[in-house]
Amino acid sequence: MPELPEVETTVRGLAHVLDGQVIARIETRRADLRRPFPDGLVQALTGARVTSLSRRAKYGLIHVDRGQTMVFHLGMSGRWRIDPDDIGKHDHLVLETGAGRTLALNDARRFGSVDLVDTDALEKWPQFAAMGPEPLGPGLTAAHLAKAFDGRFAAVKLLLLDQQIVAGLGNIYVCEALHRAKIHPEREAGKVSRAALARLVPEIRAVLEEAIRAGGSTLRDYVRPDGELGYFAKDWRVYGREGEPCHCGKPVSRIVQGGRSTFFCASCQRP
Image 1 (cartoon, rainbow, N blue to C red):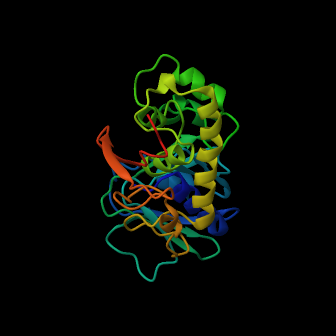
Image 2 (cartoon, rainbow, N blue to C red):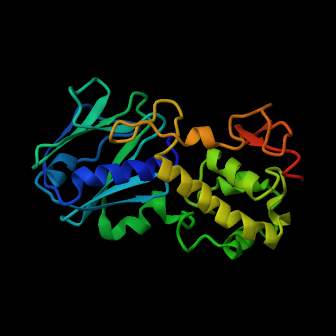
């Protein structure tokens, strides 16, 4: 699944083509993705001017001058194609700008989604209303995590994946951040010290920012809007490296938590 850095990279790529442009034409080429396209989507966006683009958690937001925002989620395999040579069977939403550019939302598995939300009501939209702070924003602090973890027996790794605690963190980057902060992924969240949390917050930011600069990760078929693959995967310290040496020389371990693989170094990250 595209994670936060991939979505951020996608939004930045789309902004180069869409920001300030008029949507001259929009076409939905099937009735639904994970759920139906919004009623009136074509009418609402045709002729609208894009005022800005942004991201919330793993959602991309395209804001227009009619007080509405198109919210997209890439699901498992979604990606935007810019100026494709042709429109394929998995290009389910197509936008054309007044400048003659074409953008196609491609989603072979159709686990993605597109919604139309009043811009002023975005914070109250059900998918956003209960979300925690953005991991790259000022709301993520050691104090916030300490309060969220207080008295909790669940593993710290699982709680970091809880979108009500931190919005947008995914499996890869939680594994990486915990390794950098030297926190064992199975440690009870309520027992993680303030000192450890003070290490963890900047490491969360650092691993995400590095991935964004690198253009996302090379998981599956993820491609940036400009067609280039991301290159951050080669710099993973533990994720996907079971049995390979950590920088300390000890082998990377893998366990399963909440149905997902967790990679860590038992030497660097002691319980």
